[in-house]
Length: 188
Image (cartoon, rainbow, N blue to C red; front, side):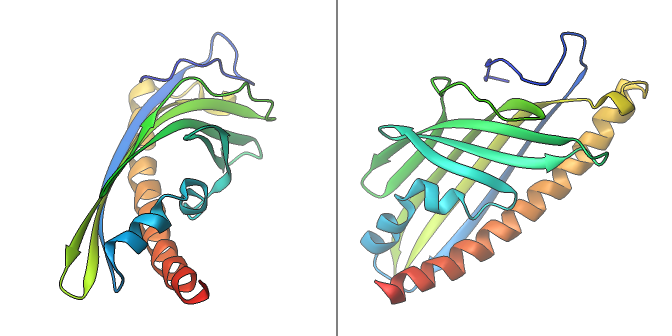
């Protein structure tokens, strides 16, 4: 994992489960490329559509912090922090991980994550096609109630949970973007 920020709410003896996931989706919008590109340039508005996104905000020029929250199932809050840099080029937006984010003061177990995304915009007859790819990596601290379980079991459990979560995130994100884009176009 590339993120090396300090963790809060985690002891030096904590075990971790390393997880990653990726997803690709093709959006089709009945709008010109320039309009679809303008919509995706509002990084906080787009990433707020991710399920479980607690907050997304700019902390510098083209720098954003995304906080994804969850519960460990035992009443403890957990949050993954993704510090991001947006790189804008004609017909292309890249989101890459960065490690220059501000300190965090969130309660509960907080851990860094690494997120990369890419959107490629192409004209298509009567609409715009946006090829969107997303890749996430994180090392999740094992909650104390689960630390006695075998590491291999926890890794397998974590991988299945990550597959489910990525599916849920992608489905929620794509539905959110499609309806939000339509509302954004008709309101402006």
